[in-house]
Each structure stands twice: as structure tokens, then as C-alpha cells.
Length: 379
Image (tube, rainbow, N blue to C red; front, side):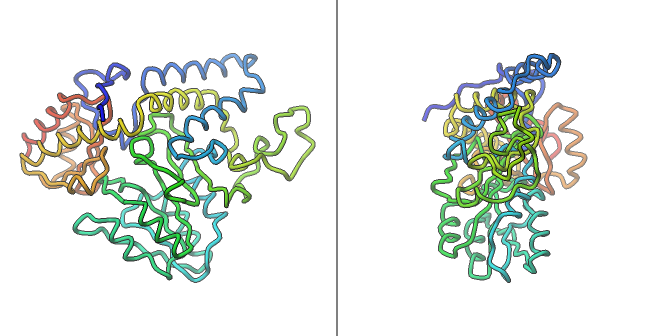
């Protein structure tokens, strides 16, 4: 597979900045910034906002997001956050009473709190899969999936260090047990291949502002057809049937728009947000997810080899996502190390004792060299 040429020219990242922190927040490309301004211009001149602006841009955005999930655009709801999507799932999942909800240790809280609340309401318990010492998350999860489990809420990679979870055998086991699978793909959608046709989840959510390089305040929520007749968590006008007819909005109805549109959040039609997100997903579609994954795998491989040469350790490449590298070792004072990196314009995240390095197509070999130079100076 051909790797993607460096795309730094599409971003406003100065040469002296080594931004290796896409898992924290993806930078807006120049095209995304311009699209944001164009969307804001609509609000500046509201007489240019038409009724169609409430519908067509959202439909276009869903059509761009659908291939990332391998689903129909009708299966996607536009929501403000992962926690919103988790709340939707918690409201609509049909779970077997007296069983447990399975999560993994150190899972991001947006995919935890809704399940803790649900467990308390339905007299369930939380089953937490402990971090495996050998880094084999998939086997550890499968060992806990049995008749005691009511549902599994998981990521595709661990947000703190990129530890990989093979969702296919987990999905097969969930199907055998007849339990729903709910996924937070914020740290993998857009950089790793995924298919709801293979994995068969009940709900999937992904924030737009990290690897999807889009705006803050937007998340994509996939809802399987089995759950598209459920109850939204808010009562807005736009997800009701025939809402396109502004003159008839006071002809109140209990009927919803078809598919997952009933779960669209209120005011999701922001011209600023939609314009930025459309520009971002258009770039990702042009690059191709498999090509992005292969290119980032090569970038993290090079950094891993250089870091190992100066005494750092990491989970084996085969057990990590291609785009996130978690390094352990080095000085114990992580706060001091973070200050040193920032002083040298090297940007990454510290998660516990792990240095989380998450490059994208804008990173160069010089960025990697600057990182290793700083790490070498304090090891």
C-alpha cells in the first residue's frame, strides 16, 4: 500500500512546533478553518440562512461519515458529545436483569458514567477487565465475557496508550451470548478500519474533534436498525416528521423522522459546526482510512525504534493501534518532563506514567527527531 505524502502544508503548524498530540485534539486544517469562517458568515448575515440549511448540510455530513462506519447515512445521528450518545444508548438498550456491565480498566469516563448510572438503576454491577500485564486486551476481555454479562461497553484502542482491542472475536462472543455491544471509537474512527456489518454493535459514538479533525461539540452516533424505534433524550422540533414544513410546525406530532434522525440533538444544524465537519471528513475521505493507518503506523514505528534505543519501552507493535504509541520508562518526574517538552515546543500527552504520542499526516521526521532529542537529554 502506498503511503501518503506529508500533509503539513495543509495545516497551520510552524516548523518549530512538533505537535504529536492528535489523540488530545486534532488541529483544524486550513480548509477546515476557512469552512468554519464561511459557516460563521451565515450567522453574521442571517438573511442568507434558508430552510434548507437546517437539513441538507447535515444530510451531506452524514453521507461523508457513513463510509467510516460502513453503514447507511440514515443510521447516523448528529449529537454534541460521546456522553450524549452513551446516554441515548443507556435509555434505549434492552438488557437482561441481574447481570453485569463489562468495561475495561482506565476506560475514558464518557463511556463509563452512563453505565454506572444504569447499573445502579437496574440493580446491576460493573465488571472491569483489569489491564493485562502482557498487553493482550482482547484475550482478557474474552475471558470475562460469559452469561453473567448484560452488555459490553468498549473502545477499539485504549485512549491512554493505544492498546489494541480486536473487536471481531469480541463481537462474535457477544452475539453468542445475546448481549449488545456499545463502542466509543473516538480514538480510532478515521484512522482504523471499522465496519458495523462485521462488528454488529448496538450503538457506536465518536467525537469529531480528535482523529476526525473536525470541530469541538460534535459527535457521530451510529444506531443499529434494531434500536431506531427508541426514545430520544430531548424533545426538539427538527427530529419530528415533516419538520421541513415550517408553516406546519405547530401541527404537533408524535411521529419522528425515519432512521436514526430521531436521535439528532437540538440545534445540530449549526452552519459553523457542519461546515467545518464537512471540510474535515472530505479530507479524510480523499486520503483514505487504510492509507492513513499505514502511514501513521510507519511514523509510530520509527518513533518506537528510536525511543527503544534510548531506554524507553512500549507495548509491542502488534498489540497497539497504528496511530498511538505509549512509552514507559525514562524519568519518574513526569511533570518536569512535560515542562521540558513544552519548553522545546514538543507536544504530547502524559497519561499516568505513559507518554502518549499520537502523530498524524502533518508530522515530519524532524518532529520525531526533536522528540527523541528532548527525551535523550533528560533520560
